[in-house]
Image (tube, helix red, strand yellow):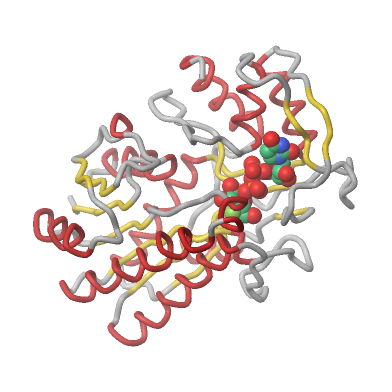
Length: 325
Ligand code: UFG
């Protein structure tokens, strides 16, 4: 059994990963400032309340738990807000990650799995997107993810930190056993917004952009089930533990689904009408983001198992409808 420190362990992807880590025999210690995470989502290991920007709190957590690896989810995620308030994003995502890496180096902790994002690619020139595509983020959010990737590389060369940077495409769905799900405030993501509309909590779903160069003119994304994402982290830890070198890889399915297809699946699975209206494109949204999947299969032995669109939406619907939120 290994002790793993999970920054952001009370958040959406972090909490699902803690559950999976515990099920394979590890002790996940959630390190979270609870600004966006939920204490009641930490059920498979201890919660150490703390902020990655506070080096004393980090050091105290390392001393108390002596983890052998870190999975680093903590950070801010709303792309639109990052444009309006870049300082807050750079502080939380870049300065916070720097503090974490410095403390890891100070205590000789050498393994980290990092939550990167497809946002590092910006507006891709081809699809599916290979990892070799040049990073060209179009939002401060994407820039912070790219900056941390560069920092990891520099720390790997300078002090032997070994890392896996996982570039998630669109995380979606909920724990198939109904114990965890997506709870953002504000909620900006397509699937929870559509399902909240189905529950009557929002008056209508707004479809951003109906003039994209895609088959049905709405934007295409690569939705990957959160439990599959959790499994990618466990595979990345295994790779680091067995001496695999630094890795940056996409985590996606290789299949794109349009906003219209997602809406139709939400209608079918919920049995609700889900009123919708169209609106102009959201600033910075690329027409299509779909992962090339070869590297994750080859270097992590990872493949999605739950990420077909109906499984994603059925698990999300079970979660939202059970909570009424
Ligand atoms: N969309 C709508 N209506 C909504 C919400 C979203 O039409 O109410 C559309 C968006 O315009 C986009 C698609 O649905 O075309 C998916 O949007 P999400 O907000 O669910 O997800 P994003 O693709 O914008 O964001 C995801 C991650 C981010 C990450 C980004 C990288 O959630 O963390 O991919 O581009 F930065």
